[in-house]
Length: 401
Ligand code: ADP
Image 1 (cartoon, rainbow, N blue to C red):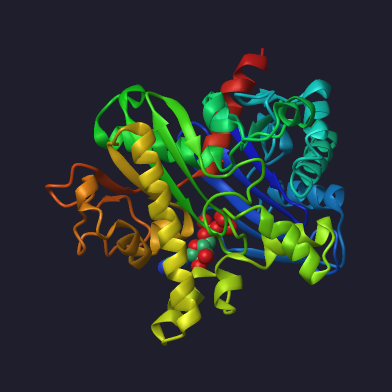
Image 2: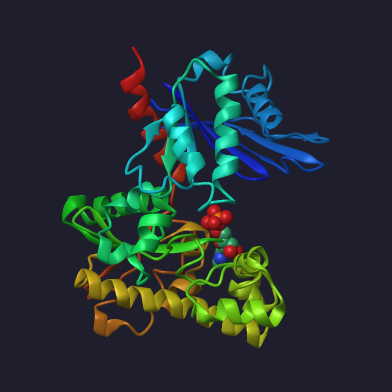
């Protein structure tokens, strides 16, 4: 069976086609600059040359059509016709409290995705546009929604509730939801395999460090806590997001800088984080390079970034009463061994001891714990698309006759 995985953002469409018989990727690509002049599609068919296609301007519907045309192209396509694709999996960022698992998308599901526009204004509207454009072009196959929030739905109220008047939860659904669910799910299950223990018996702390970053505490197969909250702004310091903050700063800054609610939201999401501290870049490679050149603000950004991760490790070790492993993943977690080293330094009292030399690896599955470390220190490359493809297959099988 073949599954198409689609991730539609406000100005991009990412896709992969999987052959689920062996879970190989037949083609993948990224259409960028959707809705603005100068759209660019970079398509990578397995075993063939990469293709770049440029268009003047495409909306999401025309963009999806271009993607499907490329997939069926006689020269660089990966299927002869769309009939070969058995199901489509869509990444959906916010599923609110309704979805603790992936679902086959029907009108009711789309209604819930729409109801979450308010709490995920940057993500859910383009996600739904992608679903509707794809459904219109591929009406005969099941479309499955895989939610970033679903994996965290096993959290209990003492971890997902804020200390706000209870009415704010009941009326406005203000609570912690958590994001990056597919990534945490994937690496946590892989970690259990590496530990040689049933997932349901493990205590795992997953650390996803990319442009967006989040952590998760998992015990006995349930998510205990996660660092992102009502929105992806809470928790760790990120490329451009501030993470945890005294909420009083928000209205103080609005006052001082004359910002309205949209502008302060933009400020904290786009201008803060390591970019804001360093003034150099949101990209961790640039920050590391600038810090190496002696830039004091880049050095400070690195320290604050690592310090926040350490703080959450302490938080989660307390909540889990110890753990079997830390798992590093995503762009920085998989590649930034110097960052991993700073995070894991000086935690031997907590049972965390690394082998500094073993850690010096980029992009590979490793265990860099020292032999006498009580906690295993794992690096596991994430694969969010594969989680979406597997879920899509599982649910589509239930709908196919
Ligand atoms: P996204 O959240 O967009 O999926 P990624 O998981 O691709 O992000 O991570 C992007 C981040 O990974 C960037 O900050 C990038 O600088 C960082 N990164 C990539 N390679 C390295 C490296 N060798 N060392 C440190 N950071 C790296």
